Length: 107
Image (cartoon, rainbow, N blue to C red; front, side, top):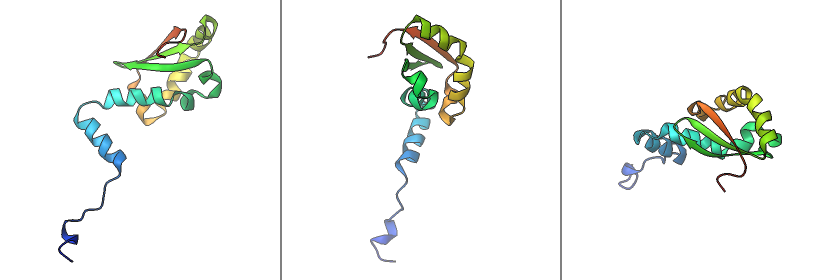
């Protein structure tokens, strides 16, 4: 082994480094909640994503803006199914509750 190679370490994937830093700072729950916001269209599907948008995560509550009151009512009846979809993702367990609001919030 040459002198230069003695100190060489195989690089760690950046995702593992980021996850460990977030965990060491005690921010795992917040980070995971914001992952749900970022992946909202993927989680709920194209149909629901066209009329709603996750825009905020705070203390276990996911805030979702809905196009109008009628869609808000429709999605309110589907909240348990939506929550089950969210929790099927590893980061989705951070979401304890979903709060629906009418209108374009968080723009």
